[in-house]
Image 1: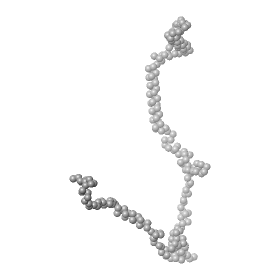
Image 2 (image 1 turned 135 degrees about the horizontal axis):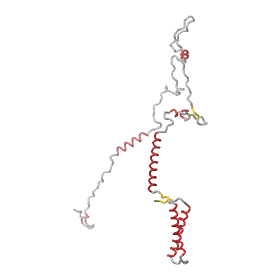
Image 3 (image 1 turned 90 degrees about the vertical axis):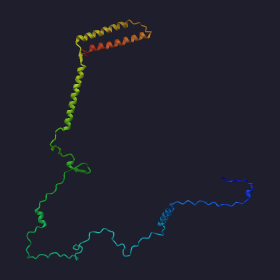
Image 4 (image 1 turned 135 degrees about the vertical axis):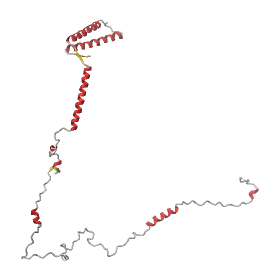
Length: 255
């Protein structure tokens, strides 16, 4: 049911009402808060120091001695030259004058005399530059070592194959050109035929020239002008053909 609202001047308003305290909801707290607080506390405690960090103090017995950090040589043995007094191994006594020398023992000097060692020959080199840069003479290209090969001076197989392919291609091209020439062979005109053609050209030129001479002097309409120009072009072409037949005695005509 809806709450009843009384007007301000109502009798019900004279009765004092009890004030009801409204309770606020609990404040929100994150579930990760304890973890964050612990991490922050650990990071702060790590830096919480007074003065330098506490380290182990070296004992007075372990002080830094002189030449202790220098590189040391190999330790000397008991029989070394530096400690002759400590050596316990004694050398054999010097032989007496009357003792016979031992026989059958080869010394180092005798071994050198008996063995013949061949001295090592220096490798032949080639100097490339004026600064002394050198390399082996065998790799420099100055030694003719390729002439010792079995196939030296012979044409390689791939060059022979390429030459044969070129020959076949040239033969096919020559056959094709020959066929084209046979299909469109030229016909040689004899002297009689050339003279007949020349006379026919001259007759045609005379005919066109006679017609050209018969034109009127005034070309006032386009048809007269076009006819005159056509006659001039035709006569010029006939003159060129007549000149060609008169200059050359040998003439070929396509079939």
